[in-house]
Amino acid sequence: MLAPPPTVRTINPTTAPSGTVGAASVAFFAFDVGLDGISNLTSVPFPFSGLPFLTGADLFIPAAPPTVIPIVTVPRGDTAATRTLNIRRRPSTEGRVVVQLHDYEQ
Image (cartoon, rainbow, N blue to C red; front, side, top):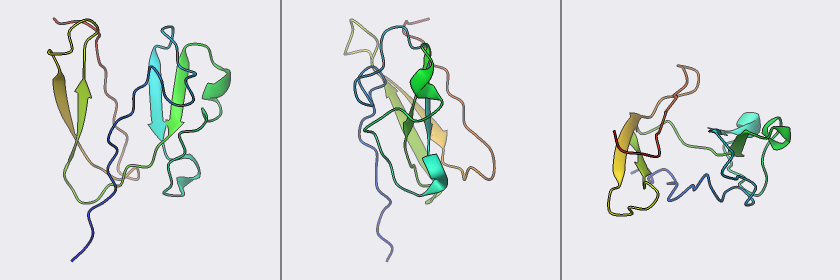
């Protein structure tokens, strides 16, 4: 029996990595720097460390098993109004996933 893949419990783009993301950040990029299968959330990887409105994290998310990755958002001011978006796990050799989130209810 195979062990389950490691899970990412919480990545809060307003505080991680290293508390360098501020309210001015408009995009958060998560990718495996160096394709080494290891996450490193201690610093913002190049080229995002020098860009004022973009940030990123070295985050490895396994593509197997072929299930979904839940993305849970909590709107500011209403912690009871969480929303969950399930995206399909896929190897980066098959494509990329882009998720756009809003900080308000439509």
